[in-house]
Length: 576
Image 1 (cartoon, rainbow, N blue to C red):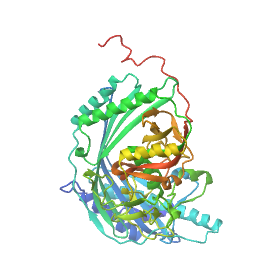
Image 2 (cartoon, rainbow, N blue to C red):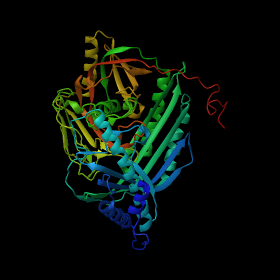
Image 3 (cartoon, helix red, strand yellow):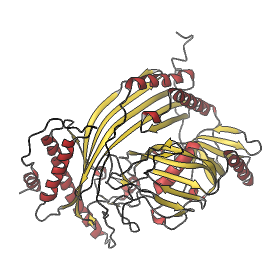
Image 4 (cartoon, rainbow, N blue to C red):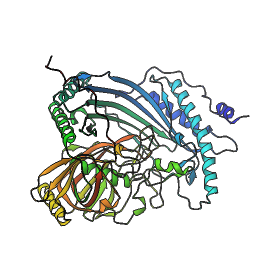
């Protein structure tokens, strides 16, 4: 009898109670869905076994209920809105044992390294929900059996002796939070996007522009075979303002502003959004007229968003996802990242003036909301504070339920979206310096350091492209707003088309000064698998920092052809 037929006979849904009418909790929680998940989990644990083959020793089910609205304004008008509701199911099923199972291995099917995901009915039909959960669990079991066989062969072929557990032993508890955010005011935001996107009508150099808003309201349901469970709501707003222009030589100049929050009252007012769009348009217009950057080696001051992205792309990524994968195909290794600082516990990885901790239980910092807050991570483990760096020395790492040689237990930082496997990521990362100075003194120090290098100017960077703007071989994305600062007068002059070169983790140790003021950088943190990367909300609290030495050079990008005709709005002889 075939393996497929055996699985169908073994796992076919058993007779159940008649489907109940829609049964959502008073605050939006579906008790019918929870019952279907738990009942099918019990049946999987007790009955899912094929003679002579590995049985599942761990199973988890995660369901995401999502309502989402996607609105976009361009040049004062709205594009077609996108609105949808969906339920999605993700099943993780492991065969083997906690000491060695089928996970943390990428076989020949590199594109198939994704979690098992399927759609669920929106209606609270108990039997229909049970059927879909059973069906995806069946597929997950088959995949796990195949992967376990390949991983075992991989280990034997490479004579791997040392083993690290594949699943940690963590406390079991349940968590339930049902508070819902206020509803979405679509008319209000459509009007705002029209007015914000209309700003770009006043800037003839801007070729393309837009103002876009994503809003989502979700409930996450989780149960696992060890007894953990949670229900929690998540809500997110994200606004992106974008603009693009071209210099006379054809080089494209673009930038965007990303604003994220958990609720409408955390977002800027209409007046503030208009001002932000005006500043963006002015910056991109100035970039198109600015001179090109030349090769530079010397001190660099990182302010505002640039400092936040510097710490995100080098430090936050370095202390996340410490476990590397076994990868069958060598060419595929470039697509699977692991924490670059994982092997440096007990060593100095940052300037000795720097301390770092991550605490997802924090809700605010200096009166500003932190979107990296959560009570329990996506594996059902309570989030907790982790002291990562003390006086520049790496003391700990962010852990999910994936152990490493040095760390055996989770510290509540297992996070993911549905597009990728779960890894450890930051929640609220707080960076502080023991020695600080005012913003004015920090710029004066930049000029002093540049003079000591024998330079006529130092460099100040205020914006760096976000993490998803990195090229494959980059640790740090290219700078967007770069200014030369005259060592004698302090005058600033904007430069364009620069990129960092030869950036290594040493840059974290090259910090020689930091600002008194700490900035709250709310953003969405990327995962570690290129090609299926998804985002989770995160926050970094950080100072501005001066680095003793960085190298920049002119960009390797090539110019594009300029439009043959002028922008029609600005080419009219007179307004209509």
